[in-house]
Length: 113
Length: 112
Image (cartoon, rainbow over all chains, first blue to last red; front, side, top):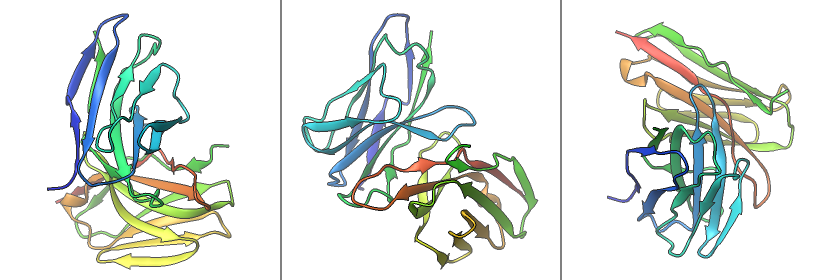
């Protein structure tokens, strides 16, 4: 089945630690996105990539980093510079030009120990 | 004023009721309007997609866009307990690039 796989489902971060969230898709989509969702809040865009080896900052990129070395993969690193990382992180993909029709993964809940 | 406003609810209705969910927006440049459904601790899924003004129907779901009032609606007929979820509106500007702006979501509970 085609889809987006996020792992792990739950992740805990210690003070000063960097953690990486995995996102893999087999939909052959060109564009991929990372969103952050806080309780009672809408989705906020962290980073997005329209093509391999290229990505752009979203609205809340500070404290995060990404890479796009393969079309299928778009990992997100939450760095120690992100002082409030506890949130539900969602990865999405879309066809090139189909920016309205996002396909989402099941999310990763990140919490701080 | 936020770009997209959506009442967070929660909204509780009996099974079989007609549900009306709404969003207002401030920027008249928005041209694409979407409704996503999100079950608890899951990723959202696209429910309805509308370009510009007008109505769109898909089974029990109807999306309406009123650009003159900057107001969009999602109607659910014959609501079912399985419709219990958070409904997020989303919008995008026209053109080749532009990211989605999401509302905060309305939590709906349909009671049997």
